[in-house]
Image 1 (cartoon, rainbow, N blue to C red):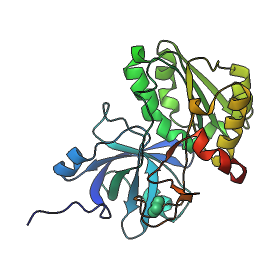
Image 2 (image 1 turned 180 degrees about the vertical axis):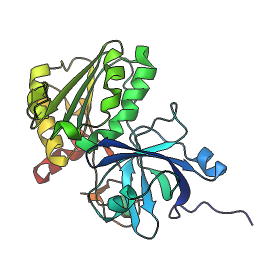
Image 3 (image 1 turned 120 degrees about the horizontal axis):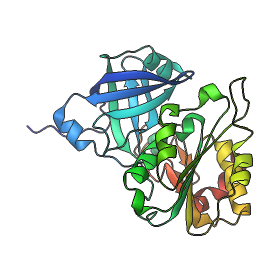
Image 4 (image 1 turned 90 degrees about the vertical axis):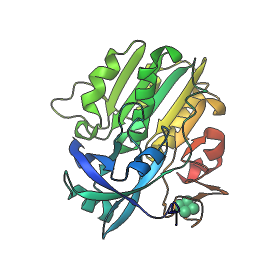
Length: 278
Ligand code: FES
């Protein structure tokens, strides 16, 4: 009898590499054990998957890897709860469960020929990494790339080892800010909205993607609106309390929409009526 694909059943993967990304944040590189599953697991920038620590539970994470760059699945994991604590206790060679990919993705095809402005806050910026990789790997398909990258502290900035590559790419700018600097920090100090006002990207022929904590998303969208960006030019990703990932359990609703199936990528028009609750 042929095995039916069961989306609730995690597939066993091995941690090929675990490395520190920032204080309390690790990057997990996972190789799925079953070659058929590896082939089936095709995903787009913006999608997410559940990663499980066996015997403890599972949690959703945005895929931080890029299909064209690696066959491994990469997840940035912040140590904040039972599942993530258990994942942080694992090391290279240990087994984890993965199920997915789920959700919709960023409209990278429609973004071609446009100026792209990316705003990432803390660990929430992880889903932007495959967007950055895709644009850098197809640089002439897109106009100017402006990345605004923020964290509470310098030690919480993620993907710092890639900053030189990002900045070396043609027609690409990276701007950093932290809420609170330290003795070594020589860059901007302040909220990402202040950095946005300082960098002042033009709305002309532009599209923005904002990923981060809900309160950051709210104030960035309001700031972009004030700068003349239209709702169609503003894309966000949202996180929710997710259990099934397939629109069945009703845990992740945002009004009539489900973050897991209608999102996690939304337009400003989708979320504008919920901004007050963010
Ligand atoms: S996680 Fe179950 S409906 Fe979205």
